[in-house]
Amino acid sequence: MKRTTISILIATAISTASLNVSAENTWKEGAKDAWIDGKAESTLLFNGNLNSFDINTDVKNGTVILTGKVDNSVDKALAEELVASLEGVTEVENNLTVVSAENPKQDDEMMQKLRDSKVETVVKTRLLFESQVSGLDIEVEVNSGTVTLTGSVDSDSERDLAVAIAKNTDDVTNVINKLELKELVARN
Figure (cartoon, rainbow, N blue to C red):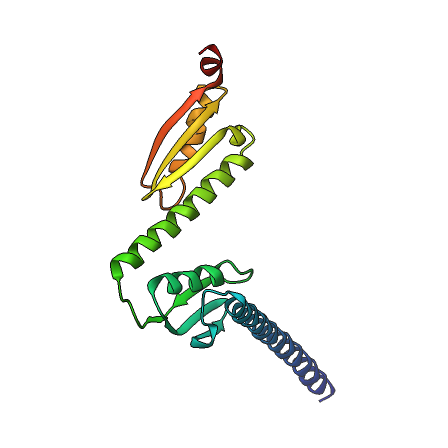
């Protein structure tokens, strides 16, 4: 009888401890989601281009769900980009509704300009951070997904690396290589 009582007490203690660990993990996930939700709401609120009162956020296990309405597809994409860039966000479900697409062609053009601007920034940043490329000597221009690289580099391998970096960037459709070798530029 004494052994049975001790066994029951040990089993109860182990069960209680595992329940506490499970409850603690659930609490931490809930707190993390609430923290992400607060950051998402604040980010949308402080962005002057969006009417954050028409956008609702909900967070489940790091996934932010956007609902509500926006004026155009650019605002919809902007809200998603802003939220996706937040620390802790694993995914964004963009369920925002566009309520007044007066000129879809203009929205498409604006979206392409935003994509081109993003691509230009990403390529230039990657070139600057690549130690094998003299990124300060390379100009990057993007038009409709086509990246044009101009400037001068020290070697053929540096030129090839710069082109590869541009080609391996999301949303790049083509790369035009106008990079020249510094020694050839110096002779002319």
